[in-house]
Image (cartoon, rainbow, N blue to C red; front, side, top):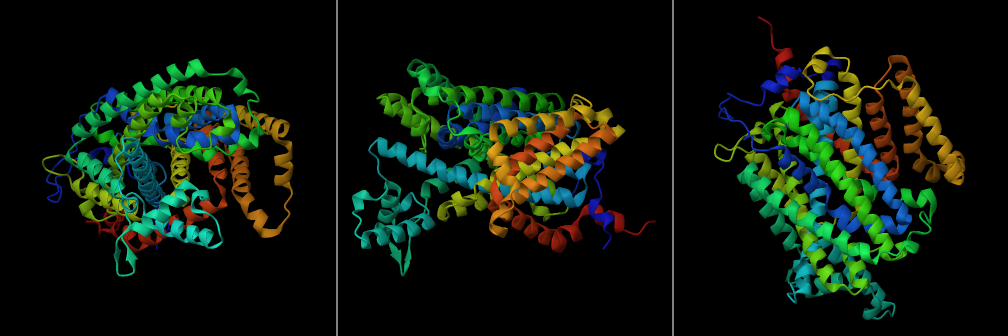
Length: 579
């Protein structure tokens, strides 16, 4: 095996020429270009404002207090570094595929495969989690309207089975059913009342299935229909969020903001995963590059606009929530609705419940739009079967890839509870951001890339600034969290304790390497900061998520070496006999 062949790069001219096919398999079809700057920005907002603002913001605030608003700012800055790098790639290579395509141009085929495989996991797990969350909000909304669906039709099989077992044990130990948490009671009821087929209970989350089917249909029939739906959903949820801010501001009690960071820096950082999960959607904009009317001009603007708008809303919402009630009360799944119910503003809680259903649907729409285009891009390169690149002759969408995406999301959402692995969505996205930032550092040395770039990452020489920033951050860390740093430096407790420090050790080593190369090669500061901040956020996701993430990548490498490498178009062309 030729090791160098694994890192063959795709020429930018070739990437731009592959958006149109004369091949009989594709019928010479292209994706329809319908998206304007407003549409792209709307897609970004649709993807970003979802579970983060309606759900995970509660637990993050309960752990870190009002200071979590600053964590949103820090995370937004980390995302902004990445967004600027995405923007340069999008303006230079306006092709579907997002970070996969960018990696193919900057790192070569093997790294492109790894990031493509990673993105498939990220979008699939994220979509499944959103579909399940949407189902929970939807059934709660119906219950509020006195419409009750049998519990076994609104819960996944695994949750019902585990809940029934746990409740049975509690009942056997003498605990009264009324004293058992409500979520376990619901699981017990679902299992008890479900019809049985032999020894198998028929428990399935039907609302999750139906929303995935509906969204997949919308994505299948065209980008124009998808954008209209996304624009409408975004407008509705922005109106509701502004209403929440306007009404909630009158009930803010400033004393609730003191102490601002009750659990210190460590408490604030506990919310990193939840807060970052709120931002992961902006990269989905880049998957629609081939459907934008003017991608070189509009893609960079849309990414920045969406990020700025959503950050402002997140910070204000966090401050309003933590000002209305004590941060200690916010460890709930629906913090916005809870706060208004707590203050006897039931009409607002109802409006928020409706908005949450709309918000979740818009997130699912954008993610279901993005994933098929990654399948399509990988198929074009021969790394996946040809069928995934097929364009529908009427709707001008990647038809087969869209249907497969629907199945990949709908079936697990019907039966499985993926709450334990939803952090994989965050770690997968961060990994993509790291590679995109690193890709800019590589392509900056390519004169052809610099000439083509409609939008360029502003250049600031990081030679001296980057080391100074690291020293300043370290000093601040010692000042605010000396105990945490001292505990990290004590390698005690054997492997069980040490393994959790490995991601941070790796991060520190990468920082040292980057300091060396930044000083030696005068690297651009913004991509370097993007790489470092995203890598740091990855270290906060824990060794368990790293283990699962690495296991998924190993599986991907097996698929690549048994199928992708042998079918790669670049490899076949390079290995073909020369005439």
